[in-house]
Figure 1 (cartoon, rainbow over the protein chains, first blue to last red):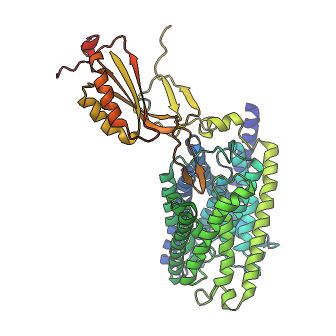
Figure 2: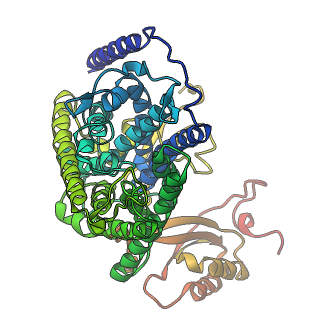
Figure 3: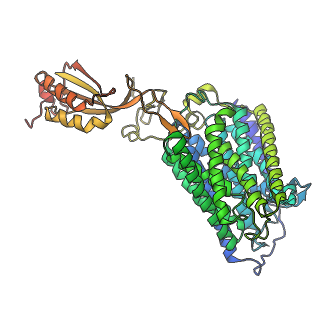
Length: 474
Length: 117
């Protein structure tokens, strides 16, 4: 077992080294063109890149982390944190080029920018190429991180690492190329301002497929644990809302009126979605929950993502309302009937609300808002709705089928799922050897003897023996 | 000496403590516990899923009193803890063979009788 790990690790290490050496080959330095670069645009895009990073950690990390049981809190945080680190490197080495390199067959990009060569300080539009590439890299990270909600609390770590790497390379990078990098979906004229299709539909469908393939958590749906820390989830949602201004308004790639428009559209839609979810919850379930408010907000953020820079502000309220309603329906009605244990509701909140957002873009898009966009159904152009529908179906198929295939490949190389015992004890302990909280006044403060953790719901008691003192002679 | 183990509603905690002290109990140990009896917990809702726990949050108070105080303390505690609803709790009385005041080494009733009396 140990040797197998070393061999696998060795091969991965060699592959990474080879690619790094390739990337480090000396290239002609491109001169920055100061006349083309706008400092305001550059500042906004760089700031937006940082905002989107904050959406991964701490945003999504804590949004998800608060929803799982205490014994899996760290494993869930690790998913987002690790993905951020993994994609930070993958994007530079080959991710960016596969997404934004010269078009190959309308499907993916060429190797022009392998290892970020040719990606320099020169202008790409009105911002440095590096700024554009960095901004885009954050989108890749959050997309992969979103999927982890589908298999939370039961996926083995090596499988998760391999899956993330393959999904980013074989699904995200090509899909980003198809929609944003000049591929066939872009050529079709489908609109996606900030990633409704590329990020949310793809991750939502993938999470559902992953949930099916990996299987349900033990006891689902009758005996599962409630969120262990709702304040974390609310905090995460707030950070997502905050960071999303970079996600959407930053996608204008300029510090201009369109960015301001996307900013306002984002905020209005999210507010509307939150209200919609709360009203539904209040009337249908009897009590408005803060968890519902947080989830509704995310659904609204997702829905407005493809539309923020194409629809009027008044329309964004309808997009948001729809996002909240569709998300609510997906999580509270459809999910139980689908049977898959999509642990953190990625399909409902991202897949379905994202689908609504993409279609709504085809309804409400208005060239008066953005001449570089198109008019939608409401403005006499039903063809746009059709283009949106095609892009949605394509994303569903690519993400769904692709995820299934990747999981089957990964599963053949390493077990996907934690064992029953590992799952019952908790992944924090079994995969990471860590405990999230050591709050006890006695055992959080003393360094000696038995460290005992009691789960007050009457379930497992976990004991670790840590000896910090020299053993006494018997 | 007798030990009273009281399991009461968390919302009645302050009242019970006050009653015990007024009745002459000199010390007590508090533990937060979960328990099961006839009471059904109120359901919680997260993301549309309804959760019903089997074990309900209670407070456990342990106090040791001299035999002559027992009835008085018991009645005071019951009066303070009672709401009349299912879930009011239980009080168990057990015999204490001995007690030691750690600071002075006093044993027996002297260990629990307050020097302020």
